[in-house]
Length: 377
Image (tube, rainbow, N blue to C red; front, top):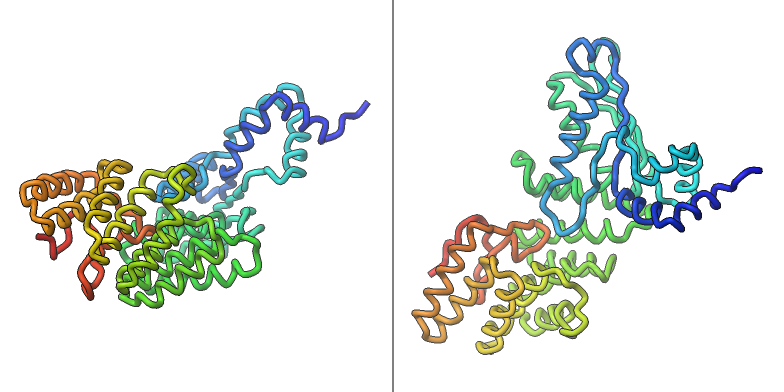
């Protein structure tokens, strides 16, 4: 008597094996490689090609972000539920059942080939964002290592365009932000035809950061609003909108935006310590701009509680206390801010963690580094 696919999947689900393991593996990329003999003579066996791609992809996946990137594994690594299924000779049925449920992780097929006497990498696969894709990286004027690096980046733009672009922000010093802006526009055009509002929202947020870097604050406000419209749950864009409004001296609007992240205190939209500390710091600057120094101080204190290693929270707090006349306490807070530079928190997607914003009117934003701003006192 035959057993239906859904019965198999249901049995594994009842044992909590498919549910737990599938959730752990839905962001996993599985890689298979085939290699031409000329590559093998250079020492690039299928296992080496897999490992090289995994290393390059992992470097991109490790980009520091508040959004999780895919995990990269070799196709030889079985999930726990697939391992169990193979024990009872049901592995093919499990794969089919996962396909029915829409839970199969993306898979990348890689071929190292010779085309007209030239080396090339040909990659085909399927992503949750753009569906099926095909990539060719020619070896002309490139080392083998450069080919793998390019192949990994192009693959990641298919699998997770946001993380790929964010990687270029932080790790590819040859790329200008204006060039990234053009690349983002191309990805947004492709995303028009997909249901992935979160990806659109995240990329629009990065365009807003690029606008801020160009001192186009009005343009940044418009982009952050578009990001929020695409995904109202994306709180980072709301924080960035608030910071931009402060830069335009629109303090109450900025405070209203932050309140949607921090309130009500018993049911906040996020429990992320970095985001909450960022929110309280931005709102503190807003209150400071309004002349509400006590409320600003309370928010900087909240920020320090949520994120004790924050440089920004202690630095703004020290400036506020100095303005209020307590020089000794201001010096203590400034010393903590300097100590916290060792934990420099640079997230290009979060404007406060990428720029310094001043409570003073008309002072341009300054790109953050492992030092306090040039106008620090």
